[in-house]
Length: 250
Image (tube, rainbow, N blue to C red):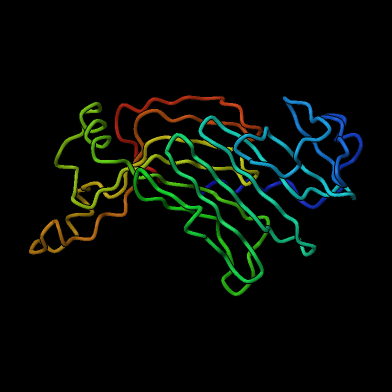
């Protein structure tokens, strides 16, 4: 998903100099905690509810990172790496603005998505975790690259009207999404409106004329439109783009 910036190596020993640049590591309950914005206080839970926990890095007694949580304006991403072999054991991605909560557990026995933790109130969710080799176990350095939240019909109608999109471009299988793209560090890279499978004359011309639109396979094109927000690798927004016309993604 075009966000292949390599995550800084997770299982490294953080030097004293690096710690001093962020915040002094606070020792508590056998772990070290690095937490910006809100000082860590004695008695605070180290592995607590990540929806209320500020951005935080948790180190083990050797100062190897075993947990990390980063926030963005739409939710947060939380990881844990507690296995001795370095495999990721937990990944929790929340998009609160979309009333969506995705919890995925990674183990040496495979990927587990317990239904009781996964809800979807606004439409289809597509979850991508990057390229993996199916013959090998999950690579702990891979993380979610993109989540697509499908727009409800009333939102689609509003977008079509607002941007004066020609009705002939719309097909029965055209799909509209809010896309959330992530860096491998877990920080949000960009978010905005995305539409797949619009009527493209060149592509549609290749289809057999005796097939109805309802039965045709939707074109593979993908466009962006509307407001797109872009963030740097530390989570700060640096650019906003307003697209008043459809822009083809290549």
